[in-house]
Amino acid sequence: MSGMLTCISPIDGSVFAERPVLSADEAFAAAKRAKEAQKAWAARPLQERVDLVRAGVAAVGAINDEIVPEIAKMMGRPVRYGGEFGGFNERASHMASIAAESLADIQVGEDSTFKRYIKRLPHGVVFVVSPWNYPYMTAINTVAPALIAGNTVMLKHATQTLVVGERMAQAFHSAGVPEDVFQNVFLSHDVTNELIAGNAFDFVNFTGSVGGGQAMERAAAGTFTGVGTELGGKDPGYVMEDADVDAAVDTLIDGAMFNSGQCCCGIERIYVHESLYDDFVAKAVEIVQGYKLGNPLEEDTTIGPMANVRFANEVRAQISEALEAGATAHIETFAEDDGGAYLTPQILTDVTHEMRVMRDESFGPVVGIMKVSSDEEAIALMNDSEFGLTASLWTKDVERAERVGNEIETGTVFMNRADYLDPGLCWTGCKNTGRGGGLSVIGYQNLTRPKSYHLKKVTV
Image 1 (cartoon, rainbow, N blue to C red):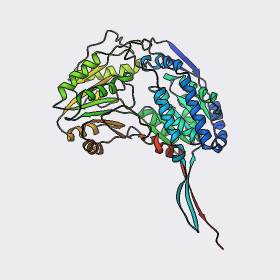
Image 2 (image 1 turned 180 degrees about the vertical axis):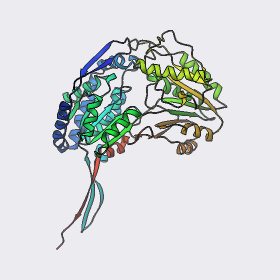
Image 3 (image 1 turned 180 degrees about the horizontal axis):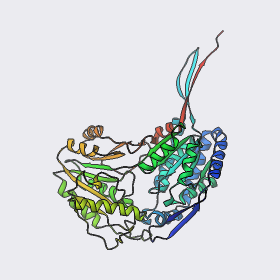
Image 4 (image 1 turned 90 degrees about the vertical axis):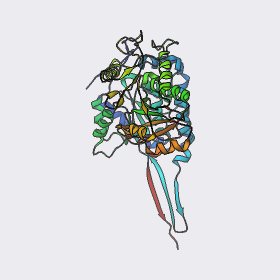
């Protein structure tokens, strides 16, 4: 079976890149090479693997000036923001710095009779399926610790960011990582499913839609292959009556609109205490009215097109349905809104949870704002979602944030910040956001398997 993957630029609808997919035979052969290369890679000293991954990361950084406009052309993020190397490097560097401690044997006890300990061993071949919205940072979350832990990696990147996996693999190879240890592959959905169902991999890490995660789990059914997933989100923000309203508005609206709202942990719902509500909405509207929608290759553009017209159409549909149901829109249509990928960012009030814009993942530059009168009301609304990735709480009271946070069904609780991934913490979710965890020491635990040693000494 043959086919072609095509990346259409949201800037002008032109073809940015095309790549042929591997046949099933070619894909299985690639997986076999990865499996054969894994033992030798894992046998290298840990520090050597760490150094090679660090060198690969640096090689990506060396071509950042080429990467930034590529990202703009592939998925629309304005060049003024400088790409992703800062976060890419931060995450990889942290995982490199904690590798020795995280992968060390767990000593259970030794005396004259027994020696007992637990080793952490690499799974083998790790298959990484990465999304287009933050194409480098989402990929490195798994690629770096998987390689450091002694796994070989096959990376399948999203069609919308077709050349990212190619760029990463070439950079890592140039730094000395063997080609069979880190492979970028172009695959159809059917061949992807065949590989997973055929036990080609020892662990699968998928970031993407709920439907995509379900497809991965179905393909792996009965194979006993581990599957880690980070799927949809509908992340809330809650502004309490003692919050710094200016800081809350600046951060939450940026969290809702940055990258045209195409963030896994972007803010999609905001609940504001009634005493601050009017002030918050007015300030939010002022911020969004100041955005410059346009070509992401131009330095004065602050918000670019959505990555694909169909994504923009879904956001438009959610907004339209909400307005018909009684919501109020606060942003007049921008002149640059072409009815296609270029979409006016929108703030909605008078919204309810009966509206899809407050229930379904929007993944675009729209946010609904609701008034609340108590923590209990806010908690109930924040939990009224099929998703659970992050929640952002705004208050001066740490204990209150912890208390409220304990009641929220989510993977991460932020206080007085939002839309950030700290590599020292586990990146995880609950409900339909998926299961598993990346980064931190827990990321290493998920990319390895435990092996126990119970050694009885011979005594004379």
